[in-house]
Amino acid sequence: MRSATRCVVCAIVLCSLTAGITGEELDLPRGPKLQRAAQRWELLWDVPPTTYLHYAAAEQKRIDPLQPLPDGAKPIDPALSYVHFLGYEFNQIGEIQRLAAPLVMEEHLFQPAMALSGDKQKPGGVWTREWLFDNLVSNPKITLSSSYLVKEAETFNGAECAVIIGTHTRVEPAKPELETALRWLTYTSTTTTWYNIEERRVQASAIELHASLFRPAVTTTPAATECYDWYVRYEFSRDFDSTADRYLHERVESAIDKGVERLWALRSAEGTWPYGASKRGGTALSLLTLLMCDVPASDERIKQGFDLLKGMEMETTYSVACSLMAYEARYITEAEKRAYLSNPDKPPEFKRAVTPEDREQMELLIAWMRGNQNEVNPFYNYTRNGEGGKERFDFSNTQYALLGLAAALRCDIKIPAGIIKPLVEGVVAYQQPYGPKVKKVVGYKPPTDKRKEGKSTYASKPIEARGWNYSTKSKWDKYTEVGDAYGSMTTAGLTCLLVGLDIAQSMDAETFKAEFGNKAVHQEWEKAAQASLECGLAWLEYWFSVTRNPNKGRTWYLYYMYGLERVMMLAQVRYLGVHNWYNEGASVLVVTQADDGGWGSTPDTCFALLFLKKGTVPPRRKVTTGSK
Image 1: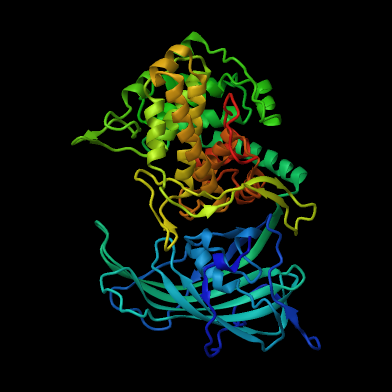
Image 2: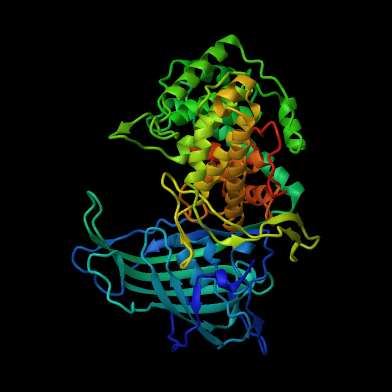
């Protein structure tokens, strides 16, 4: 899991050592230097792959530039958040796996600072290396040449630490860059890193950055030279052992309770949860979340929310689909929730005792859904929007449409024929055509010692890991191994397949015949969907992360986390490869929860809570996959 072939480092290049600041002029929480005879430390990370590490931005500020800024330059203030990893996302010398890209600015700054030599060093020890950052969020690629010097040990926040000074300078590109291109103009940074000798990990790092880049004009934003003269100090905040089931369970229960209270606090005076221009969508998603988090349907605030929902505009596919899911959640009993969480291999069969009034509302929503499916393709947009024989669509809207339809079907509300077959066929057609060949893990037994590897059983034949993009056919370059599929849209594609297969299985004879004609057609359709599903699950396994949206950084991160939970619950997978997806993801969410109990906006708080509560209703039959 910590292969050096999957890190951001290109090579080690010898260069002369240049001295950097030590941070002694800064007011840092350090203790005295520790004078010892023959101090010598083995500088490497020793973090179990299942342990989550969180580093907070303890201090950040703009500092004086090394030289006066050029005319028209735009100084940028730092607005950095945390840095976090699970142990499998970097190796013992602190190289972040290449699969973790694209890196956000926080990770880009922290990566050179967290690098270690991997061998024994004493004060005065030096080493050098070169970094290639060719996949950064919103910033151009850059190559840095780094030099490191080991200083005397000292205490930092009560921990005995070796001090490492790093200096990092930009390597000029081999070919001149276009004057109009997004490009770095200057770049130097100095890092002071405190390595915790006992815990064998970084305790803190202070970074002084002086950099500038040219950002070309975009739409109404004029071109500008941006200057980054920053000081930031990251300090170890906490770790979390994702294998500590009992403690994790306690933290999850507490996080859900606080999250529910935060969701109530986000409610408007009217009794809704508007999100931007979408009043129905935010309200329906919040009602769904509260109900799945065990708020009783008899709660007067819940009743008020549904009463208000009736008079709201249908708005979009998202809002209509979430409304259908919320109505279903109103009738899911506690007995059913306990049953499908305690025994996911045998989902329970319970009826939804939907009242006539709610059934009428759901049927209106289904009619809207049918009338707003695209005509020239089988997918969904926010609303119907045909232009010149083309209709926009995306797999995010499309997956929610299917989730809404499935919720209605479980409530014994008939859905129209002619939707599922072409839609699933379209999803299969838009999947990435090629991908890296991997042998999927089909059986995994975790180790008794968390610092050792578990026992894995692999599939006999390799399979291509193939994902999805937002609204175009995903691409993959087998020579550069670069593609545009990413986590949240791959979970969307997989959701479409899993829900589509389940809906087809649940159809009555009349609807089945109208949809497929005969069993032979259905069998071929199902075979193609299953093959696509296996390759999609292989993509999630290959790119697995719970600290970022794979291949997208922190963009739509919590939306991805809810998508991951949904796919794992629909596929009834406990381990995705060697990862206990729930424990690892929950460990991140309980640490990143804000003091107010939320995770940011109303939708993000809902997504986090739905992950923690395992808020997806499983299918009525177990889907056959290669994972367990």
